[in-house]
Image (cartoon, rainbow, N blue to C red; front, side, top):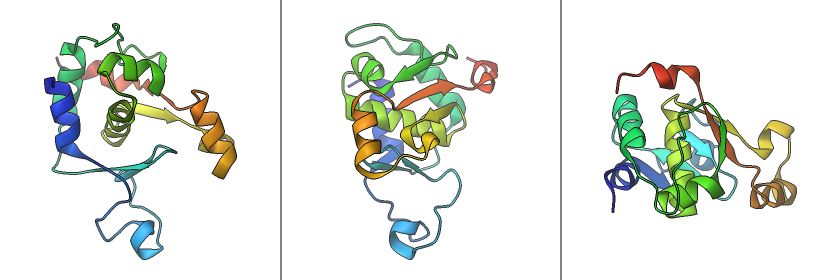
Length: 141
């Protein structure tokens, strides 16, 4: 594995959140910035990841099947990032971690008020992406 993948796996948990504060256990809205709905599954952040370390590891990562710069301010979907990281599931966990850290904006079917089967269909077609916020470029390398 690469340092970026190790970091993603160390600081995310795939599936329903188990913090006891999120709606999947209490019925209340998820705490802001804690759990990210990636349509296919939710991703919860754990163990206090660092925005700076996330950005540094992203900059240092060399693609598995092609180079991508997810911090360039352009839109990158999970299919493209999956080729870069080597796995689409880990790519979605990467995207969710970046959203939680404030590095990315998530572009998903939820932005169009789509839910259920229609949201899943749109996500399967690639409408699940991130775009780096301007602040990501300001984090020292």
